[in-house]
Length: 237
Image 1: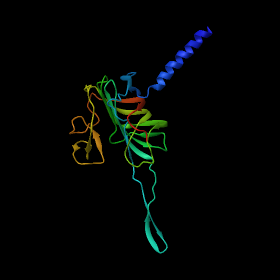
Image 2 (image 1 turned 60 degrees about the vertical axis):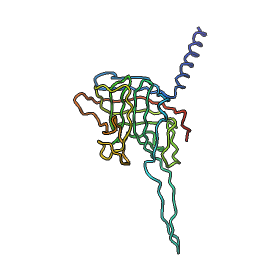
Image 3 (image 1 turned 135 degrees about the horizontal axis):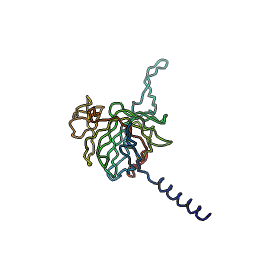
Image 4 (image 1 turned 180 degrees about the horizontal axis):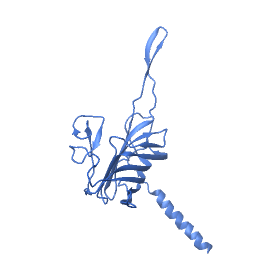
């Protein structure tokens, strides 16, 4: 009996160890009020087409101070490391779903909000539908997202370990399994523009932004779960 129990422990440890080694796993569910789960999957990020886990840009610029001394007036620089970054990530799974997500990161906090203008969108693949929205939270665990706060320039993210809870709208219309949504510059959140802007949106045709579905077939849903990403070609900051 002891040998059987010991063998069970060894096998359990092996399976647990394998689970820990999966550094590109997403365990997500799409839930609404009427069904247990509209969609659920344990997907794997396809690192052959997902070249990085995302990019982070400082949310504010570094600041300087102007000072005066007796008899002279001069300007002295005072560098302050910004703790807040705007993160955008596009993950393509091996089952061809694409998750585009924007959120606010602060190294002094454990979670941040979804970007209220650009939000998130999950589309394509085996899912074959679309969920999009501009509300929700992203939680990162201890050292769960690789951002160098001493660098005040845009940087590539080599890994993260996140827990998400996103509020969006589910559309029953079919989305192409091959859909990979690019970004475009926009000034009004509706149309793409060739001009350089500080605001971008997701688009399927490079002409108009994808906006939240308000048609009769849309229903409110919640996407919840965990995402791990490890991009082997990005040198950690």
